Amino acid sequence: MVSGGEEAALKEALLERFIRYAKIWTTSDPDGPETPTSAGQWELARLLQAELAEIGVESELTNHCYLVARIPANLPPGAPVPETIGFLAHLDTSSEVPGKDVRPRVVNNYDGQPIVLSGGVTIQPGEAALGRTIVHADGTTLLGADDKAGIAAIVSAAAFLISHDEIKHGPIELLFTPDEETGKGMPEFPREKVASTICFTLDGGAGGELEIECFNAYGVDVTFQGIAIHPGEARGVMANAALMAACFAAMLPRTESPEATDGYYGFYCLMDISGNHESARQHICVRDFSRSGITRRIAALESFAHAVEAAFPGGKVTVDAQPTYSNMKEAIEARPEIKARLEEAAKNLGVDYHFKPIRGGTDGARLAELGIPTPNIFTGGRNFHSRSEWLLLDDLLAACRMAIELARETGC
Image 1 (cartoon, rainbow, N blue to C red):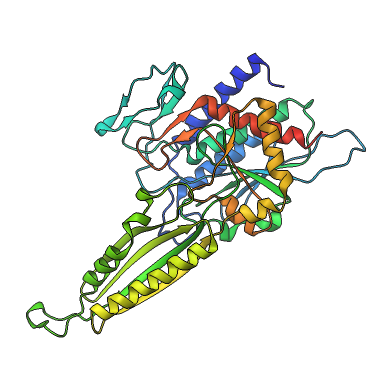
Image 2: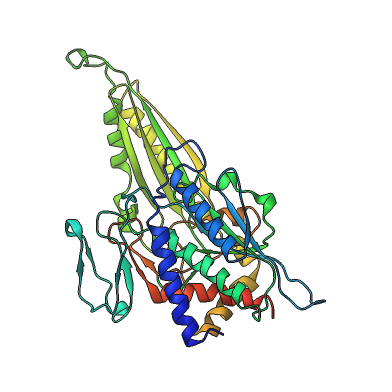
């Protein structure tokens, strides 16, 4: 379907788009009250809207920075029109490391040696990248492959489909969303504007990784109310809220932390902690693949709160657990043909694929809750949310071709 010359041109377009998008500062703000939480997301959304218009794709940008684009079916007259499918990527990047002034660097014919960046940051792509093209930042920022690689793949796939009318397909939607990294974007998702009954996020990692299940996620705010008094007069009176918070944090099982778990093991992750003698707070991310596991973990946090109260007479601890997203597995398993479509597309392209659980979440998890089953497709990025993040261009090309093939399957 994609000739050798076309594949080279598609790869070049992917690289140019990705670098252009990566340079735009779209770090989201976990404490931002509005959607989107950063101005750069508007900048990228407007750029995408203009680029889509140039290739002939109409789109609508909502007042909360959701960009919804539509490619009509091009089936023969009288042919039945299949259900609409969507492709989704998010505009923002993580705030865990700097994302401003990203300077992408392209390495052609990677020689297999470690790449030392600014500040001693080292990238070791390994044999999988030998002789291939990789992209990385300079060590002072993240790269932004999460998820600007997905955006580049979707826009490039759209441009390819528009320029190849011989590839018959049903109606397609392209969705670009803000604030995925903070979990704050999807409450404003314009469900009424979206016709897709199946969607695919392009927000994954290494080539061939396909994901149809993810964590159940809760955000837990723990507040500590102490009793403040001059330390010289504190005996029998003071309840030090800052120390209460520290004791609570020390109760989080180290064997159930992100750095000690993998596969299907869930975790507690302390995200921030602050306070003084009178009051303190901390935010904890709780993750588990099963609902029973989530329930157990929240119950454990509540028991830790009681233990801290017992150790600090007069102090009070409040645990407020709120759901962030749910495992998308159930919604996707209810439509087994979705997994079959992914497998067929990968086989048709000769992609060496495998299914793995997402140790995190995507906007697809929230879409599944809204009735749109949404598995996740690789984009070729590695070491997300870090200064050592890098992208394998061949994997990004394969992701783009997966989107084209999934669109083509709707026209068969």
